Amino acid sequence: MNHKLTLKREEFNGSCGCLDPNFNPLSDESNCGSVRPFPWERHLFSQRRLVLKYVILAGTLINSGEFREITNSSNTEGISLMRTKTIVTIVLCALSLATACVSGTQTNTGKKKKGPNETVRIGFSMDTLKEERWQRDKELVEQRCKEVGAECEVQVANGDDSLQTKQCDNLLTKGVDVLIVAPHNGQIAASIVEAAHRQGVPVISYDRLIRNSDVDLYVSHQVVKIGEMQAQYALDNRPKGNYILIGGSPTDNNALLLRDGQMNVLKPAIARGDIKIISDQFAKEWKAEEALRITEDALTKTNNDIQAIVASNDGTAGGAISALPPQLVGKVLVTGQDAALDAVQRIVDGKQTMTIYKPIRPLAFSAVDSALKLARGEPVEAKDKINNGKIDVPSILQEPIVVDKNKVMQTVIKDGYHKMEDVYKNVPRDQWPKQ
Ligand code: GAL
Image 1: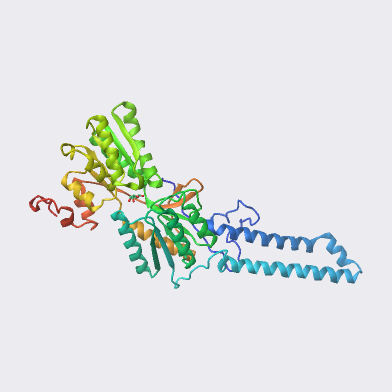
Image 2 (image 1 turned 120 degrees about the vertical axis):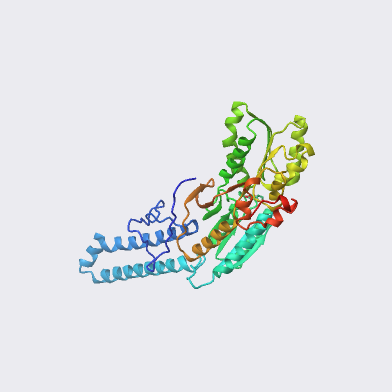
């Protein structure tokens, strides 16, 4: 997580040459020195390799002993024939070199880079607007696009993978310069990256990682750390007892990373015998009903003897709480994630114990700002890298923040994420904290 990777990218210069003198155009491993091409640019490198091979071939021919022998001979017919052949070869090479330069910037092998005053068109493909946070993501991406003068089209797939793929194809057909994708299924979305790259369009993986693909950039929060924070909070406050673990959708890479983080913290306590995992399941599509069912089963199994529920987000936390008998509400520790308004209300009411606040503004803004840079061929600074099964994806990861009853004021309310009157709506006014 702490890897420092500054990703730089350079546009091909006017002569279509690499800016690094160490660049070996004939090597497949070559990275143009320290400059790593973005995945969609790799085919341009191979095209240039081919052209350069022709040029080198022509040069070899000119300098070859055979050629000199002929030109030194008195056979003038041979000389002129050879000269004509050489000139034709060189002209052909020059022509194909010129074509490569154009295709590198203008044709279907690579989208033309936008100038600083040209409008960038961004396509934002979203899985869902179900959770409140995604509505913020949408609004803030649109807001940032307006601020920076970019055009933005948002498509929402409502949890349907083939619809999300179609919507992205559609955005590509309309000619977007960059795609920002919050995938429903992190594996299936790899085909979206392929389709975009075929048209030279870079792809930013938003909040959720697109797996096994050459995706260009990942913007998210530190997801493993969120899982660790949830579990650490539970362990600090319920160091012994029976636990229920409720994961999110197994098709969402975040759900898996959260579970990794939770287990990093819980494993030693399980090994010591301090805590016992009664149930360890994933809630399909992050559904509250699934969390309710998982919690009910565990309550039945233990005869209501549960001390903590590590729910991966606020939606599943809500489902779990609704399964608790009244005498256990507020007694069983329940974690969450997203700082959704209903969850923060439950926190101040004492029904949910904590949530993780992930400020959406820096996430949405970094996605749009990076999209602009990618479209313009400017460097994007990505300090982290996360492996997606195929490559280490340059990543920009924001810091998550723990929110419990004592921290509501100094976090979500102070930031203006929620209004005080909304959060404390169910609490008598004389019990509100002082501002
Ligand atoms: C996760 C996301 C969470 C939550 C969940 C359900 O990928 O990181 O914030 O909203 O999806 O949509």
